[in-house]
Structure formats: structure tokens, C-alpha cells
Length: 132
Image (cartoon, rainbow, N blue to C red; front, side):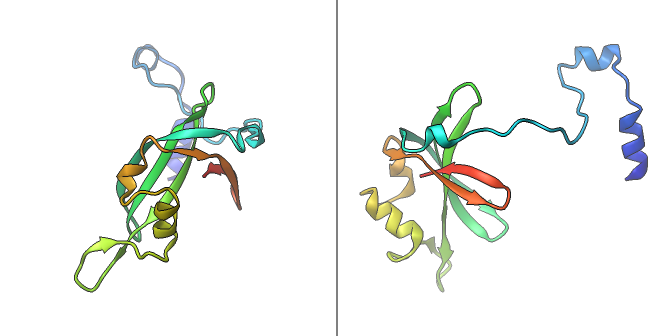
């Protein structure tokens, strides 16, 4: 790993890296913090509900259109799924997923697309992110 790090530090821009269209990656950089507070309370439509498999099973990643077009920031929410004794994936009526779908008046996460939601923030150890 150390050898790879040293190689990356010694990389210089050549004609092949210029013409490849790929940026030179330097590693960790510092950027100014993004103020997401101006997006709180904004109503935006949900544009996708993707079914994905993760470390702990299947879930839906539900996302809105960009709330900040310049930065490409959207609000998102994860809807977790559970597996029953018969191997079927779904949610219970009392789960966070079930309660959210009921609140949004839909039966399946795919039906959320086109529905409008109000943007909120959620604080985490890694900073704030936009959700609904």
C-alpha cells in the first residue's frame, strides 16, 4: 500500500493523462462547508425509488430532484426491508417504511415517484444531510 501511495505522489501529468479525460486524483482535499439550511422546508418531487441490495439486505433508496442545481444536491431517504419466515421481502405496517408509505398514501415505494415531499435535515456524526 505504501508503494502505491509513493507512486501516486510521484505521478506527473503526461499527454496520456491529459487526453484520457479523467482527472488526476490527489486524495483527501478540504472544501468549504455547504449550508443546507436554505433548503429546509422546500417542497420537491421524488424522482426515483431504487431497489438496492446492501450489507444488511434489501432496501429502497428514494431520492428527490436536485434541491440545489449548481451543486447537484438532492434529498434522500432509505426505506428498509425485512425478510419473513417464507423468504419474502417487505415491511410491516408499524415499521418506519410502512408508516412513511401510509403517510404518503401509497402501497409500494415505486408509487412515491412524482409525490412531493418537504426537505428536512438529519444530523449525523459525518455532518448534516438532506432527507424528507
